[in-house]
Length: 422
Image (cartoon, rainbow, N blue to C red):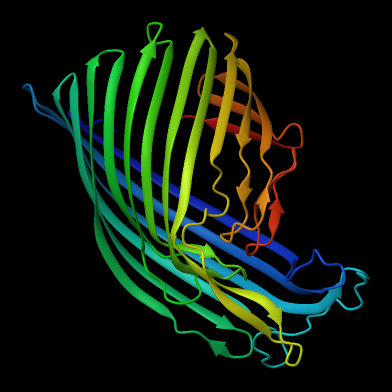
């Protein structure tokens, strides 16, 4: 809503509801020797998450002289709810020389309470109230400076329990922190500009963490250059960055999420967007990412005691390893054509480099090349889209349970959407 030529009000309300269910069998020990019985475990997860929030902003255009201000002030109120049911228990060992499953029932558990396996039941709720202010200062058409700060006030409550009556210490905490940001843009001419930015962030802890929960912190710095060619029909961007994240939640070798990891990522990004003809748009991007765990240790099951049938654990320091599912190379290409009658189509490809599936870096999944497409129609304020995902039905994998498992990515799928712009 434009109150005047100097004041604009904006409001955004959002809601998301996610439901994730999975079930599988995990294998432990050295299964390369067919004569060695392989320890197995069954696990299931039912996870429901809801996100609701509202973001209200006011934009003030100030200054009439040489220095002009584009001041943004706002407040975001967000609530996140998470309910999960995680079951984990051992199955009878299975010799690969004669892999006959005689009994699929749970064999033994970490905590044999009431004759059942421990079931981690969790509920977590967080409420965030975050006022923020950002000022984009124009000293001249060639030089802009951006300064801002956001303050997050977070109330977090979480309770974990296990079947059989065991309940862990609930988490009930309130935290607040300011996250500053700064940046500048220098454009010596209309087709060339240089920019740099630095920012910090502060977020609630992960809900499914086992053990103490602390807020997550991160800081990022980015430096880049933008260049236009062919009278603006070709636009390129090149950037280098470093991102540090502290107190992040990482699933350990046993599938339990621990908030005891720090991670650093450094990389470069390159993008080129072009419109060689009216209605024809093309986009190509490439990113190189070098990620490293600067702090992470995990307990690993190294065997089973033959007398007690209880698991044997050892702690391994994974600092210096590559995080799971952090490919070094990612590339995207897309082209779309829109006709005067409102119809159009597009297609492209995504390349994802090989990735480690666990912080131990013992196993990796192959790289994947995935093709997507779309058909669309635009008429006045109406939009109709048909998205075609993974057209060639490429088999590739996503993060699984623990560091020894993966989940197949979605096969070929088609999605239709209808939209109306007010």
